[in-house]
Image (cartoon, rainbow, N blue to C red; front, side, top):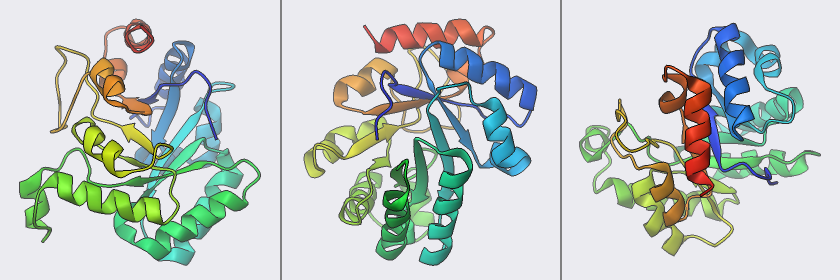
Amino acid sequence: MTAPGVLAFCAIDTIDLDQAKRLAASAAAAGFGIKLGKEFFTAHGPQGVRAVLPPGAALFLDLKFHDIPNTVAGGVRAAIAAVAPFCLTVHAGGGSAMLKAAVAEARAAKNTPLILAVTVLTSLDASDLAATGVSGTVEAQVKRLAALAEAAGCDGVICAATEIASLRTQAGSKFKLVVPGIRPAGSDAGDQKRVMTPREAMTLGADYLVIGRPITGATDPAAAARAIGTELRT
């Protein structure tokens, strides 16, 4: 599945329906797909997603499914039927059987979405992993989980920009790398610990970027979206 012309998704991180509509419209007009996650989905459900998504815009449904295989398969099936996402997320840490169940449901659908596995959240660093009992570096854990996801048939992973080069060496050429934690030069990193500019990430080989606060937190979100879109396409 492809999203012609889309290089990045705008993360709409608000539960205010009217604000979400305005932000999504501004981002879509600048060529962005729209990412909606757990907070919005919990507040408004599929009906809210349909209300916010501009006509023709690609939907990144970021629910990060992580449960027993049968439950995740049911979640994927329900999401596809309800809102027909371009891509949706599962946690690679759920294991091979869970990932394969998600992939099987996606492949069985008429409009097959990309199944993207979350490796290590960009808010985590090595000390955070150590606190959960995971030894070694963040990069080693990302590579381990990415290999698991690729072997299970996932279409790609969510990863930090700093992991693009190593994953491109490890994974197949068709394996998608979707990169959050993107910040234009001079902007605040916020709670993201592994960040990069849009142009740097695309040059390294990212397939899609996820950009939130630099657009949604801007004084003029529409102008910010246009500026970042121009940067990506020049």
